Image (cartoon, rainbow, N blue to C red; front, side, top):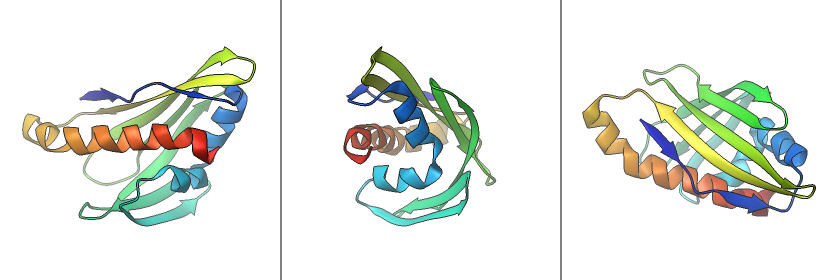
Length: 131
């Protein structure tokens, strides 16, 4: 299952946006209002939970400056990745799109598609205000 967020323009350079997304502690400022837990476990790992959902641990897997930040599931039964694609518009403007990719059975995919779509849309739309 692959889901893409809308593309969002940010009034920051591609390097600034990449640096911001590469720091996992910054994801706290991107989370939706219904977050019930957020904790940085290390410099590259954090755990979060939304009300009514299980905890999810994300780990920074790779940073390819200034274009891409890749996070992935750290433990748990579900393997997935969250990729931040950062494109340069001009010297002081970037375009960001988040991509969620995971291998789920059809029943699970049907259940989580809506909540995950909304979640990545919230993350990406909060970036311009947070950075």
